Amino acid sequence: MRCCGRWRRRSVPGSATTAGRPGSRCRWRISTACSCVGAEAFPLLEPAVLDTPTGREVARETRPDAILLMGPTASGKTRVALSLARHLPVEIVSVDSALVYRDMDIGTAKPDAAMQRRVEHHLIDIIDPTESYSAARFAEDGWALVEQIRGRGRIPLLVGGTMLYFKAFREGLAELPPADPDTRRVIDAMAAELGWPALHQTLHSLDPVTAARLEPTDAQRIQRALEVCYVTGEPMSRLLSEGRSAPPPSTFVAVALEPSDRSVLHQRIAARFEEMLELGLIGEVERLRRRYPLTPEMPSMRCVGYRQAWQYLDGEFGLNRLRETAIAATRQLAKRQLTWLRATGDVDRIDCLRDDLEACVLDRIGARFGVT
Image (cartoon, rainbow, N blue to C red; front, side):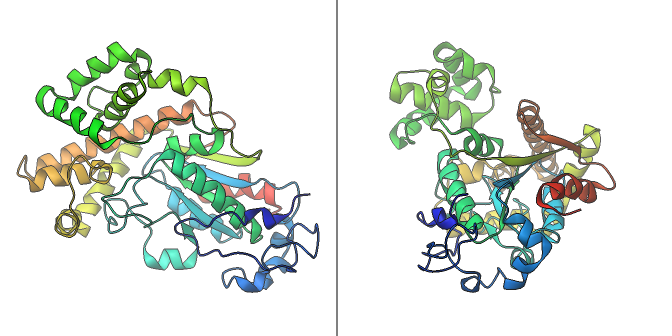
């Protein structure tokens, strides 16, 4: 039975956790001299919670280390996560490459302040839109948070649709070079002159394995794959296959929300983007451009919806074209997410279009934590 004092690694952005106090009672009953933190140090962890049957259940040695809730955009992940929070003592760890950015609220469908007060969220609003965040950094931050949350006697609930982050968290990542600004500027200049489909052909000659899984218009991933080739002299696919940094030994209960009818998901995507426009997505992008020294090549402005709004503000097309391209791009994103999910093993797959979706997910997950 391991000691929850293990969480005392460095804190991460978005977490209020601090160092523990010697002598607090160990959540895993291993020792009264454990260095983990007592419940009274955390206002969100009411002592009464630990006295409930659910609280006692999550302290058992056999419980999974975390819950993983995966799914494509518009599959209902947020709604299901909040439903789980009503029945289990969870803290939510966002697995979303767009939610990390401050001031990007509408186009990311970010949980509002009331929702974040109701359930503790992590890895939201942790960097400016001018900064970058990687799968490797997520894996590091995510594991640190899992240990912290477990140390508080609560359940980490990882929720999102950035499948590469989930993969990095579960399997580890190969050691790849960090971003190289000079190399990226050269690649961007080549793209401006030749176009991304031409650079996709260049990538095919250097790394056919990676090129085969990328669309010719997938600028961000083509850029990264070429960057790795130029910086290391090796194809990225070879580096990825040579070895990964192993994550800690762990067990998960993983649920994937997948649609039985993709056309219904497409309808949801269209309706959600219309709502974003009504809420002021274009105005949000205008404010971002005024506040930060942004360029359209930055990862934040490559997010679906933001890229198209940027082009609209630059006069490249009108509102109808903005709507069409953004919805089409979101559908392509959902397609890629579902492709990742189909290739993911050890996952409980649930139809996200079920009328009883929340109850079904709770039934599958709750049994692992003593909630029936």
